[in-house]
Image: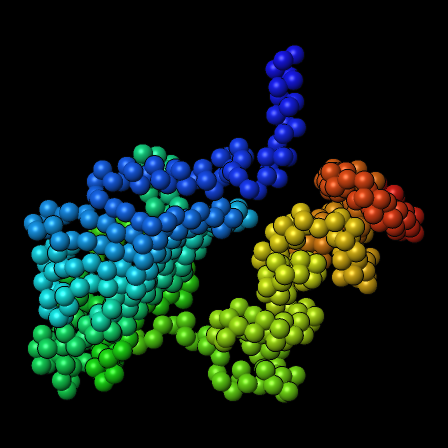
Length: 525
């Protein structure tokens, strides 16, 4: 009895503890942000057993999945630093995972700004290269490593970026359409399974070329340098290939791009880009890469250029101006979609959501599922109801990801509003009589209306078709009807009230079709 009384008193006091803002409460100690910060501080104390380190502040934000540490100074004391002068300074270090609502993606992002350290922090060879470049200190204004992995499709984006003052900017991006491991033969040493969509490494000259060009022999920087480099690299590849095999098509494409790009870079030494030239996703066979030099080129199909392929997505100025001007209505549907997508996503043109939504709306209303999906994605946070409406259109057009977005948006919308939006999109649809020709066609129509893929999602129409097929004894249609009933039940009394009218309409239409078409005789044969 005493324990019960004590517990009651504590629970009664909790609101007061929360309301007292003038002093820390017991609940503050159990704040997730504070608990994570305590764990990080324990990790830093463990790290200090390996190097000396201090910082000014740490901030944790569980909503965005970020931890930020500022004004970091570390003394790693590497074995080659005999004088102990290696000191690494970092203005800001941010570690990020996914935000709380990004439950279907795994993310790790490390971003460092304002890094500086002397040459004594580097081993002999890198320190020598630093001296050749005429630098007495390394300064990195920005360094980023970002890995973003999607659980549903096992896709991933990997990005690394480094800006080194007076040296170069390096930007590496890899898009993987599928990545995981195959452990069927050996779970202790699983084999990577990787399908590569694209990869790009861009190097921007910020001073390194001035240091290096004097070290190259004249034939590599003078007239005819392109042919010289192309011939030398081609011969080196031939030596690595099996005797008498010759260069593969991918190898020839690489050396040709090298011969064309190198003279252009010498004339304007700003950026060199090494990138894949894949027409479709390619499987990366790591074991084969070790066995045959040619496989590397056949797998990645690399080419050298002065600009990344993604710049091809940049809109021509005249097209952008027309899309933003009074003559936007004169654009073809394809151009309206292209300009609208660029404006909404901010890829290919500066982001202008309002203008992009207007252009895409015209295209989406014409039945373009992909355009509707871009609209739904753009509006899902700012206007969920409008996003749901466009997701219905996108699903009707068969756009990938539309049904998943419908499910996600429905979780945070009143069921009555969901039904209203479905009726707005599907209310004028004619029910296909030919779907009553066979029981399987009736069931398929119910499934499409329930899922929202191939037809706009409508629980009312799905229920109608499912009622007809269920009356004929189809167990799959009965299951669809049961799922709708379950969703309504779990959504509460307001959903049940809203569904009552829709269910009555579905039942009326199903009965009329059953009688007028004599479906009892048709399906009973």
